[in-house]
Length: 459
Image (cartoon, rainbow, N blue to C red; front, top):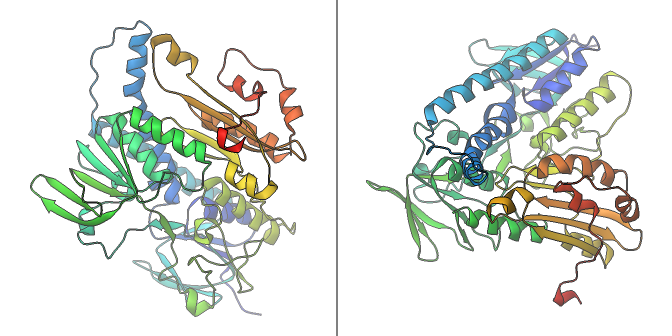
């Protein structure tokens, strides 16, 4: 029997790795968690948490307009980027410290350094405190990293979301490349903080994979807020000039901006981990291939979170990590159910969605009942604001089951969390309709939509 140093060695101290390591350690297992950067991972250090702080900061400019519409006399506001960054960094350090404290309280060892697999049980720690340890079980939770087109001439003049959190000055103008979560969120952030924003995406519309009404609605609302949305084209090259960074596009257009931010996707962080040496297989997308219990093809190695490229959301990584610990250290076989996972996009206006989009539902069921409402929120109508909200329900007519809920508008992320419970439990439209509305709220639209929406092309 090998003399292992640890019962579990976790590579990566992000949300999934920390949750798994902490829960395993609380059973009395000998656990170590290795991290080559700061504890907390993408979400806490360079992702959803600091980005949400930036969203909050950027929303105040629109709230000033609203306040004036309600009779408040508000002097012209100014924003200090460096003051915000300092406050943001202090809070991120505090949150990272909580992760460290929780690991220590659980009895886990925190190892600072890059961990590389030498075989299925052996891990080499690189860095100032280099050493080699052996573990009975290994969990890989290294997340993902931003990707940029390395073959694009001038790509060195662009930044990614990682650098966007630490810019020395707020850019007067910025071109953001991409159409996913990160791109549309940063578009709203920089526009709200006062930058002139151009959003560039090579596809026909932003937010690929979302319901088409949601995509079209958000694109219109972004433009309503002064963001220039350019679709169906991409870069030929980038050029650095005295005036800024020039984006030369393949449709003949060009833009000169202070910054160019590429938010064109993230890739599983698998390079240099020694996966080949340990025999860990990757899938066709380059992510670690796992089964329903997050186990790889190597019997004693597991992986959770974005490095597996299943659903790349922090709460999913946490649940996958918890399910791993429950299975392997509490003797209770548990797999996380990836169906009906709600998600939010903190664009401006924000999005909340759970279940199928309309196109997906039609492919699955042949027919689908659509209930849709587009309206100005009550707050907007008072002072003549033009922002519109969208709410949409999709129902399988054969079972009356609600299979999709999509919201674009104020508080959409808060509403979708509650809606997700009902959808997860298989609520029917009749049950949904039996719920009395809360008035006056935007959310009451969700339970008062009775007339089916039938665009002309569908009859």
